[in-house]
Image 1 (cartoon, one colour):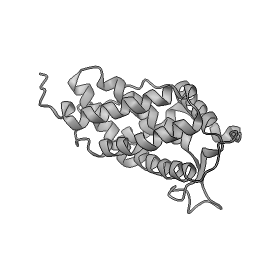
Image 2 (image 1 turned 120 degrees about the vertical axis):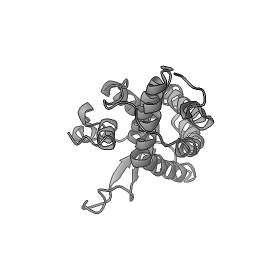
Image 3 (image 1 turned 180 degrees about the vertical axis):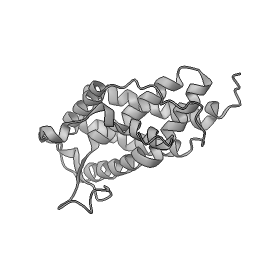
Image 4 (image 1 turned 120 degrees about the horizontal axis):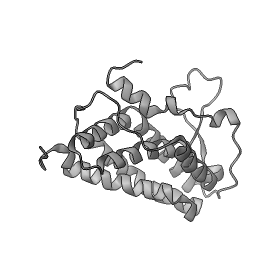
Length: 206
């Protein structure tokens, strides 16, 4: 039985949903904006999104099976490629927080566009599940999004915001994006972080 007192209808969840919709809107319409304009928009949206994600309630999932996924590999690349094209020389940054840093022979280079595409993937899937209006599905959408925020994309958001802040106040202008090697761009749907995190959270190591 549906109850409006359920946490999925709480103010914190509703406000997070609004923030997620705003982020996805700009990610999907990045082609209509200039790169520096988009960076300044993200400078304002990302802190708000972080705060709202941190306030999501702690829930338990209803279903043993994984949540349905709507964002395809092609969708991810479309968002990533458009953002990378817009951010140009502002896209890559040295990530000292990357877990591979201690194992690497040199600094780890990360990408704002890749981080934003990862965040978009999670938020868009969340929105489409939440908008079903089915309380159990909405519950599991909130549950998964909170876990992914805490364990994965929250750190990517913070790292990207630091890079965006540095670029905006450096006085530099955006130049043409530097091509990446094909191996760096390779990405397999079966190993996407959402599927991985969800399996780990449900205790399914397979």
